[in-house]
Amino acid sequence: MSLQATPEEVRAVEEEIEQIGLRPFINPGVERKVIAVLGEVDVHKADLVERFSTMRGVDRVELISDLWKLASRAYHPEDTVVRAGKVAIGGRQVAVAAGPCSVESEEQTMQVAEAVKAAGAHLLRGGAFKPRTSPYSFQGLGEEGLKILAKARERTGLPVVTEVMDTHEVELVQKYADILQIGTRNMQNYALLKKVGATGQPVLLKRGLGSRVRDLLMSAEYIMAEGNHQVILCERGITTFEDSCRSTTDINAVPVLKHWTHLPVMVDPSHATGDWKYVGAVARAAVAAGADGLLVEVHNDPARARSDGPQSLKPEKFSELMGEISRIAAAVDRTI
Ligand code: PEP
Ligand code: MN
Image (cartoon, rainbow, N blue to C red; front, top):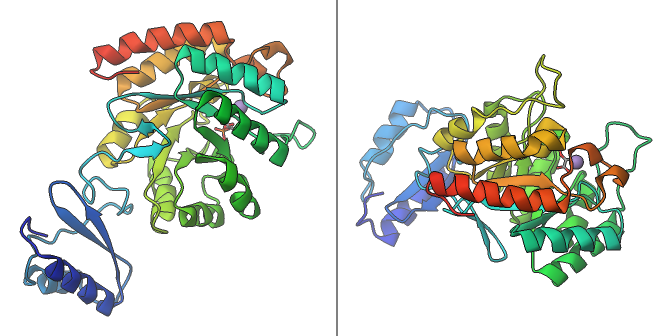
């Protein structure tokens, strides 16, 4: 819409879109109002362009060629900033979420939460529902784990990021989480994506192990199409022929995503490498490449961790890492 478009003119365009059987989505951008038109109808695109171009208040009509419409930069040129409590993800500050892979006990979670808070983390991560490769591995504490996370948030003030694995658990996890995490294995669980989309709560969407960047964006689109635009994308390493590490960090994905979408991009160097020795280097590379945040596993006693001990940093190492990434952030005009 043109900068001078009146609310009535905007409304008239919306009504026209609805009348054709399409859905309007308004991005009330600071610069200008962009209305995305979504859906499929049996009308020639050129006719639609013509029809809307001549309406009052319309500046121009563009076809978004990307399959991800709402996630596209064309629809929303400004960076999206997702907010969880007082933390902003996608702004100038690089947001760091740190904590254990799994919530194992109140004592363990409190210790780690206080340590990561003292080191300067902005968010607390921790899984209560765990997607494990083996059914015989620890599956998480469930609701008890969520309660522990809520207590840790109360104690430290850190907003909580935690995974929801099943559509039936969304309501429960939503009560405790500030950011709902969709794990790698569920990136294309469309029923779950729609369900978290309907909550309107911030979502951290992790890239599937065998998914392309474009698949990740289509999954984000599922959440956004439900009206929830509070989506953070997370590169967590993909499966390639390379087997020196648990996964291969696709560092390219960071600048590609920043180009293709307005959504914030985080990197998880812990699951990407699977080895605490490499976590620092990949975290530094991620910040240098333009990531808006990091997701880092930290454990007070990695040798005894019930999941992902080998990739978990001890609190002292995490604290060192925070210092290192602060220097990288400054070099790329960001803060920690
Ligand atoms: C996690 O972050 O807790 C997790 C299980 O990671 P991923 O889904 O990336 O394997
Ligand atoms: Mn883990």
